[in-house]
Length: 180
Ligand code: HEM
Image (tube, rainbow, N blue to C red; front, side, top):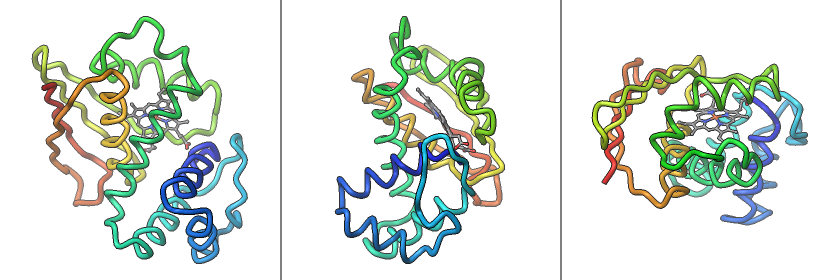
């Protein structure tokens, strides 16, 4: 997983909890990287799982809720860092349908070693989009948060139903998005 994702996560923890909490979870996780992330570096995604587990333990908030909240925050940061992806895209469904064939393709050009999931999208009707997330990593909750962050960006409200098609390990999840 790219360092930019870790740096953003640590910044979110510093802002929404405190710099001390961020330091504590980094120390407690005893990470191979030592918690020193650079944007272009690549680190084991298990470090993210360890950091989230530590934050969950410290705050009593379920890990999935923390990852999803992070996804929502991360989308806001992506919109500041990569304004080009938003040009001429006027709704969240339009944006989400471009992740697989455009956004993540460009991401891979910027970061060749990025570990990306795949999404199959299917517009069922004007207000219903199905997105099937599949990855070797268990970040479906990140996807859910990113979807919610995308809706927020466009001033829309989306309700997400989900169906975990993996063995409850969050690697293969069908999302049905209902635009309100
Ligand atoms: C401007 C928009 C976006 C940018 C720039 C972007 C970029 C990235 C980057 C840099 C990574 C990290 C890859 C790595 O660490 O190796 C990533 C991973 C990921 N992205 Fe995106 N992304 C965007 C939008 C989205 C959206 C809207 C979704 C959800 C629908 C999404 C779903 C994911 C997920 C779930 C991962 C984690 C890796 C995995 O699950 O295997 N991304 N993306």
